[in-house]
Amino acid sequence: MPSARAEDSPEDRANLGYYTYNDLASVRRAAAEAGDDLAAILVSPFKHDAGYDQELVDPAFARGLRALCDATGAALILDDVRCGFRLHLGSSWEPVGVDPDLSAWSKAIANGHPLAAVLGNDAFRGGAQQVFVTGSFWFSAVPMAAAIATITALGEENAVEAMARTGSALREGILAQARSWDLRVRYTGPAVMPYLTFAGDPDYELANVFAAQALRGGVYLHPRHNWFVSAAMTGADLALVLEATDQAFAAVRKQIGQ
Image (cartoon, rainbow, N blue to C red; front, top):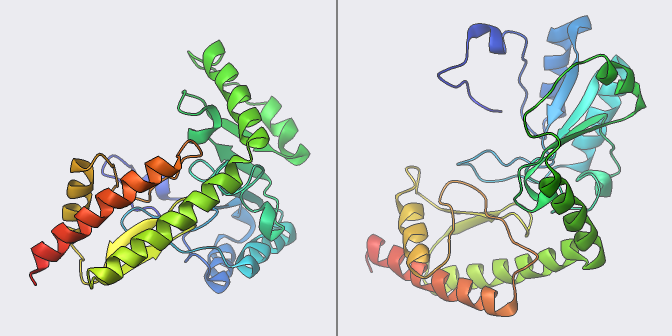
């Protein structure tokens, strides 16, 4: 779960409870503490906290959250801002058979243009109609057109499947390189949104060396955040990435010493 930011006031978090991802018992404890005041359970499609190894969702955990919300009347809210249109063309939890009540979308929805959306089922339509909000750029035509074009292209070009293939090839290549340089790494998360960490690197020293050297080779790989595979990546792009990561592993091996 996210940590408190310096600018947060006590009131910002006074009504929040916390649980451990993929631990349904911890969710039930948090819900019991909230009692009748439980409004919603907010969850991401998989655990992708920055700076930590990623963790795919256990389908039983997802279904357990859905059942708990149904039993208590709470809303199940899926944060699809980062994962939306990368794991599935619909909700990221559709493949595990779980539909959220509300979901938040952004990032890929307009291919980089500034746009976000909140989706909800009919149970929340009346409440949404009673809330007045406005914004300076709500009627900007370009992001809307970009979103329509992006979502259309994602479907017509089988982009999710293409990203999965490229991501799988990237994972296989990087893990093979790590073995060849005798480096122990953890490569976690789905193929389209992977994250690489080095064993025994709590301060990200090796990750920073790796990312810096990859950047010299023309490839941007974040040392403390998951990466994003693009549907626009070609075979030549993948070859460029793997050439850069091989040199990056060489730099890490030099940092550690032979």
